[in-house]
Length: 357
Length: 198
Image (cartoon, rainbow over all chains, first blue to last red; front, side, top):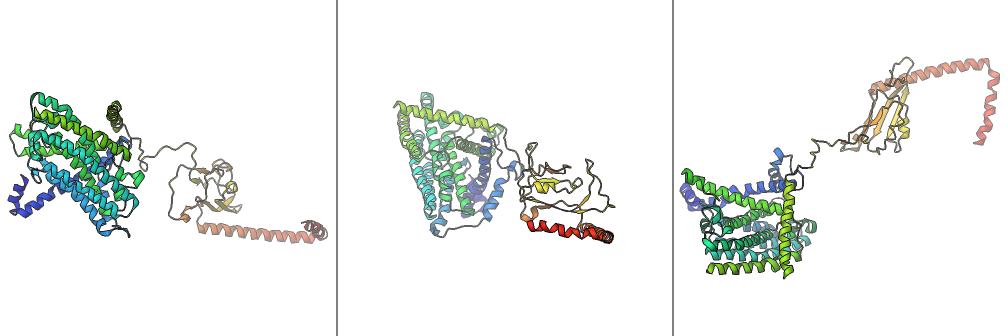
């Protein structure tokens, strides 16, 4: 575990804990956000037969660095009639909400922020904090568009948490654990041990699980997509209707915080989907470290596989974003309450019956 | 009930159809032209910034008169018989010093009407279209090839020549007046009725 290593290195529990809690941010989220923003622009551009940023560095690879520099230099504008205290807390709260989720995400066998037994539950609960932050931002800005965006966002995120949780319960019924580390360890071995292929169970039951696992995966993918306010569920920040939703009035680094939180959230939900259905940090075909006899290499491989899976799902999110048009509010609610929730319930029931046998 | 499952089926399949379309476009070559580096070939007869080839200009003022917005202003000075101004490329002899040839490109409406009357084809449209400026004064293009000193010299020369000429004329007129005093006196009286008409 990385905490023990840091403890040995620094000799102080506080320093070790502090460094460990900052590691995902500086090692992972910031570089990820830098790459993901560029990737988003490049992917969107090429999907529309454009080129995207081309002028900063080779094919614009330093575009996001330039953007960050620009954002840092920008004036921090606070409107006169806004609620100053809430206005300033909101971006911090949104980022805290999305960053806190990373505490329980297992990046590799040796690097999990906090190996708590209620990992999945903690992530679901703490990402609810984001809604409070968004609503706060929308209200404090004292602007019609931001308030509309925030209201939509709250309605959407709360509704879509239900199918997410129902699917997670389905998984928990099979595995009997909410701990993401144990959940990932259960799916070790080869890819046929992943939950999407029936998990560690054997025989007929494993085969019987597969269609319901796929249904569960589709539901959780759709609902997490809605939870992070990405297209086609981006009605809270619909550019063409609401300027840019709840962060219309923000500028400079506060805006960057929202942006960072959005991309951190994108990865967080992708990581949950990967951890729950696609074996988390487990390699699909055994480890190079095992066959070569270098055990210290395994966590690095696991880290690679985890990021690979996470970024793959982020890419699919982008792919969907540039494919599908935005849903209307009534369509959004219909999709959640009429389709996802009933199907998730039936799925839960059937999986429960299968586990009984 | 049937509609319900049909909706699910349609929703899922159409998403995949759409994703297939965007995925195909991901590998299509982009249509973007990297503008300042790569420029699109303009049509053959495009009308952009005017240019005047001063070597060929004979100062006939026809372009200035053709201009509907009067953005061309030309001033010329007659050359002395001793001056050699050379010939234009199509063989016309130049007889005027151009002391001013200004085109206010901010006024120009790119109608190309100035191009056609030019007898030596020295004013024409180029393919340059990027000439924005921060100040409007910078858009007043001067095509004169003579330096201000030269212009002053030419004007001076011309005035001197004029003065000489008028002096000669006056002298000649005086001579004539002396010789034919009688018929000249009639003229002013003959012009008088015409003035009244006006």
